[in-house]
Image (tube, helix red, strand yellow):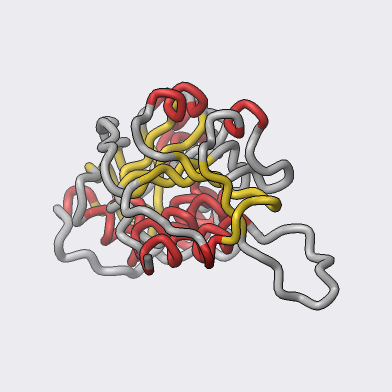
Length: 241
């Protein structure tokens, strides 16, 4: 049975300060949980109503009722299982190949989707500004659908990182060069900006290649693309080159 203290702890993990304090986070749903179990994430406990996990030590599996699961779930409609994992130690950034850098991305769904895109396109390094939403936010973890296990996400002083990197730095701007007509290298940092404000002025100064996804609509009235959608198009073009 799940205890009141366990319910209190797991509920607290919906907040960043408690995740940081306990160095724990949780994931929901069998697919995401299995992806993390088979990676470098250490499983603390697994709470389930019906799901079977033969690969997990039975001592770590705790039965839970649907009503109890609803109390600790971050989902409107809870899954049938929730697992608590220990945060892995941070790894150094490998400055080779393509690196995606996020400047103040605030929406958990966008970050989760961008992590999935990095996984899909074989981008192993995702660098985030310190203002970007926390990777262990339950909504981010859910949106990654397990890709969190295969992409190294690092939070840094982004301005400092970009100023010091030896790689070419690409930024997405409305007035940038048409990405479909640009020669794109196999290595570089691709900066994606905040949902509402784009790339900040401090980061913009360090960008040495301005690129844009051109608009093809007749009226040309769409202000911008969703940042995750734009990331998908840009990574596709970089990988096609």
